[in-house]
Structures are given as structure tokens and as C-alpha cells.
Image 1 (cartoon, one colour):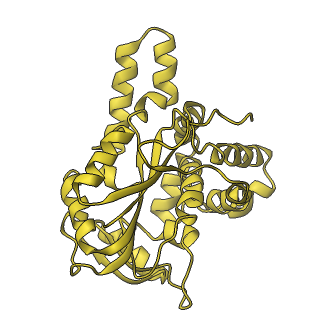
Image 2 (tube, helix red, strand yellow):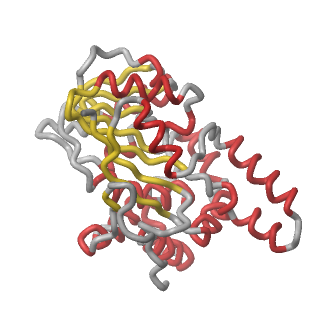
Length: 294
């Protein structure tokens, strides 16, 4: 697949994170791991985020806001000598938090809201939050709490959807090409609704909220083009049986080695690796940001 055009230079004093050869060299192994443990649509997003978040300095003690079941931290954060990837994780779902605690990835896992973090001021040297902030209605309160628990000089690393998320999906694009703009917009609203996306802002919209919380944005990039998001949209339907598997067995994927034996799964892996290279694209459906607490 041809490389997509890159976004132009650094902007607004921020460093633009670009896909280095060293970063992209990790993509095949990261893709293979994620496709062996997650549905395709989740894997393709998480592979890119794993490369980006894994390349950012995250000093300890580290807090994972919206830790879910701990899968992302286990796969993408560098472990300490004791095997933990973060010092604390917090998630509103008791079931997910229990899975995260059982994984041994965190020294402490709590059930709670990012808008009311149960930690003292200046508790952490870094906070990571991967595709979480868009799901929190009181976003400004959550960012203020993150700023509160960060030490001066502490780092925040986040990934979030952009304003282009809904329009980048396959079916809205198809409907627009057929002149059906109202149904296209309706599908986008429905998809954002079932994804529980309360916030899909422009780059400057996200930067404004970070700044308002008392954080200083340092770097950014956009990732995943409309082609990738079309694949993401369609792959939800291909991966639907994994919902049953997860409910019945607690595992998304029952046959992790299927990519070695099924030709179409090998093709899917190749596509996911291709899409992992879509970093610093001008029409990305997601943003990656780092910020510092002054």
C-alpha cells in the first residue's frame, strides 16, 4: 500500500510525531499479537496506538486512566522489574477492573471515575489514557483531575477520536457517494452513539481543553485515514462472533494461531500492518497527544 501524504510540519509550536523506521519495524509483531487476542476492529486501532504510546516516555509512578481489562497496558507499556506495567489503574467497570487486577499488570486497580480520581495531589510522574477521554461526559473535570494528580513536570499521553471519526467510516462514505447525505450523517451519529463517544473534537479543540486544565501540550499526530476507517467499520461485522466468545469464555479469540493457517486471516494481518503505518496523515480519524504539567 502506498504511503499516505503526511500532514505538513510542526504546528502551533508542537512537535509532530512521525512514523520512524524504528517505530514501523515493530508493527508486524505488534499486529500479530493483537490479532491473536482481540477482534480485528479493535486490533487495528490498538496496533497503531501501541506503537505511539509505547514510544512515549512514561516515567513511574504511572497511572492508567480507563485501564479496562489491562490488555493494552500488558501489550504496550514497558514493564518494571517487578513485571508491572503501571502503578495504578482505574476504570468505572467493576468487571473490567477485576480482570485488570487479576492480570498482575498493575500494583493497584480501583473502580472509579476519572472525574473524581481517588489519589492525592501530585501522586504520579505520568498518566496514560488510551481511547478513554471521549467516553467521559464531564471531560473538563476529568482533565482537571488528571492535572491535579500529576507531579510538576509530569507527562500525560492520550489518544482520542478526531472530528473526522464518523465521516471516515465505510457506510457514511458509501451513502454520501450515492447522494444520501442525511442517512450518512445518521449512520455516523448512530456509530458514535453505540461507541459512547461524547467528544470528537478538532485538533485545536482537544488542545484547548488540555490547556484549560493547566497542561502544556508538547506533541501530537493524527492517524488512520478514511481507507483504514472503512476497513475498521466493515471489520466489526466480520468480528461479530467474537462477542459471543468473549461472553461465554472470557476470551475474544479462541484460536490465537489462526493467522498461521487461514489465508484470509494472513491477508487481514497484512492490512492491519499497512494501516499501522498511517501515522501523521492529514485526514486521520484519531489524534495522539502528549502534554506536560508545568
